[in-house]
Image 1 (cartoon, one colour):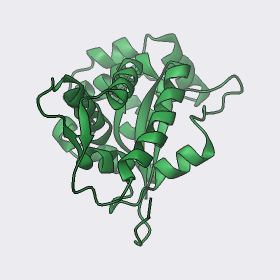
Image 2 (cartoon, rainbow, N blue to C red):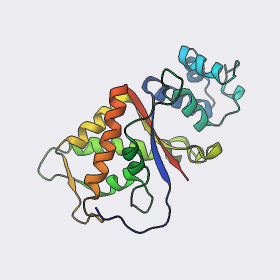
Image 3 (cartoon, rainbow, N blue to C red):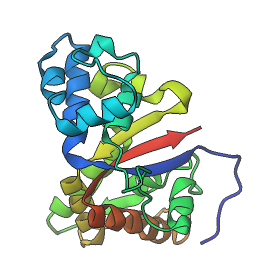
Length: 222
């Protein structure tokens, strides 16, 4: 594959997270933003949530207003999967993370490149293709202004920008759709072999997440 010459772009990561907490914490934050405390209070009954707050020195968390963190920080801190040494788990190999992180696309995004350059296979069921693009969009836009009303997840403190996420089951679905036959490469793909290269590194990270039983948060670093 011949890389394009371009200025420095953003760097992207897929971070392993506790799948069962992702939707719960995100939903609690959205509901709290709408003035409803019930989901937040339910979330705070979870032992792992309580433990994570305490390890961060927070003992009072019964309402969203008691936490000074912004929404991206809460989502990331409460759900990030740690190893036995309390360090964030690392998915895939260095080369997979590096290549996924900055792809030769105007945005630097592997996910965006794939999304723009896959097409449905004609005369076949579109289910695999629809699964593919739906789950790519979950990573690209699940936390955008259309979903939460503003750009708070793309303007987190200390550069914490969260684009979207997948639960562990959605990780499996995306990986299955990548390996399925419901899609083909666009005839006008701008980089020769680009989809093949992007899919190889994305699949490696998805497989690593699947082995951990992890969900994923998709972050952009600028």
